[in-house]
Image (cartoon, rainbow, N blue to C red; front, top):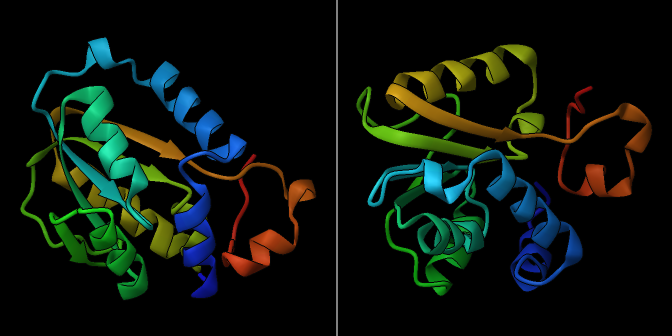
Length: 159
């Protein structure tokens, strides 16, 4: 992702209609009542970290985050997040079967090719507990591609 986009995300993700709407969609797909309190959640590609706190507040979860970018992780720390690691989604630094939920929002589209996306999906599966849940989101439809996709380095749109 273009480094200057992290500041824009940090400033906008709490209130911008798109982020707010996507969190509402997430609540519909994974209702809080379906999640045990104190579940261990991995935010794989946590960006600037707002969703980590949101996951904690809405799900009563313990949340860890990974991101490839040190700049993104610095913004997470500004938000008070501490359970962080610099890592590639295709090579997670966790033992197998530790997370109740893996959340990965708009990350697969930023992995350069199909082998990297497949490796990330294998890693998500590996770190999930048996019967764990995976919440994925990705951009749809190539006809919706815009200059924003170039700024955030979207390699692939789905659908």
